[in-house]
Length: 515
Image (cartoon, helix red, strand yellow):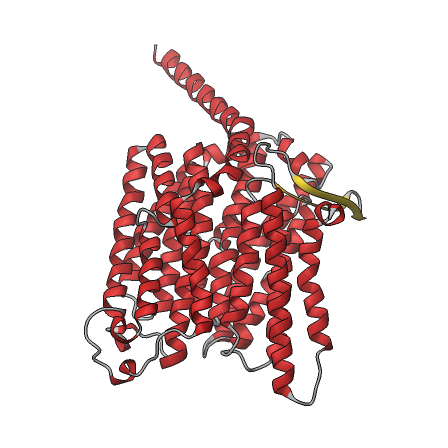
């Protein structure tokens, strides 16, 4: 048990790869038997990884901001190490990644028949890379995991996606890769300047304020695309529409969160002065994203595309929360990312349920599903209410904390964000009205059956987490709080004080000049 505790993160990353090894060994003349064994191995290893993530969460000490479960081994080059660990900002993202993965395997249980071995291998490799992103404490190691995740997702969209999958997969790959090239250049400069690749040491290094701006913009180019922020969000709707259901779940549930995590891990602590300088840019882009993409979502006829645009709007709340630079805002942004990972994943799974029956996502083809799919309608309503921020659901807590934090910064900023909440309710309730309620006007929808046991098993845990986060948010906020407070006190408050002093000096100089 001590060995497991000491090497828990490494074991979590290796477990999916062990599954890959066994899947590659599966071979038999009976293809049905091969597929059955591949599915069971994939489900088993993802469940084991999820159980290990619960051990990570249970063993995490929320009373300290220090990195925990640390492992460090010299790897190659001048100081590049295999260096992993977690703090309050990263630990729950690992739990979220491990939680969604077995759900994705179950969601693909019957729908994926072509190249099943390769499909499951792609997902298992992706799980290792996602855990690696959130646990890396070496900047070079982080970059390898961060960029490596592009490859399995590129294949998932490009091989098992829809009719326009090739276009969508290349667009996804090129957008995210282009921004990351600038980040790599910035990383190389930082390593040369600070003489280390260790993220904790880089967080303490004082980069020159003028250089910070260039480094901040280079990292921003990568993280803004990853989230995605307006106007570099256009790859997301195409990727979601073309991706298989499980691909959309992981894309919205985890991969989008890497941008927000990157801001919290790199931009705020390493470039605090530049962060203070560029808050106006983030707020402008975020408010535009919230309002513009919400209006675009209102006119969508494809359910997946509507939910994809809603993800851009929700990520606008996240970036506002991160860059108001106070406790409520940052805690709310992390909570909102966790909630969105569960809720958006659940909504994409719900779309997948009706798509499997009718093979269309066109909203106008449905209506009145509450009549013959009562279980489905109840669960859809739960996830919809969480998406619009109903009290008692996970969406409420994150949005309220972000709005509190925004109001502390500026009442106008809070008003812009709150207007987005209204628009969010408008497009989700409009979708629900057309999908769930009304009369069964189409003969094909009249024959659709309610949730199967497998589908019910997939969606019920997600609904339980939605209520757990909404009713008892402290269980998720407590591990986060100390690390967020340390980020603010150690890095952001001094930067804010320096900015105020510069403004005061500038005001004195202007006054003296006028006299």
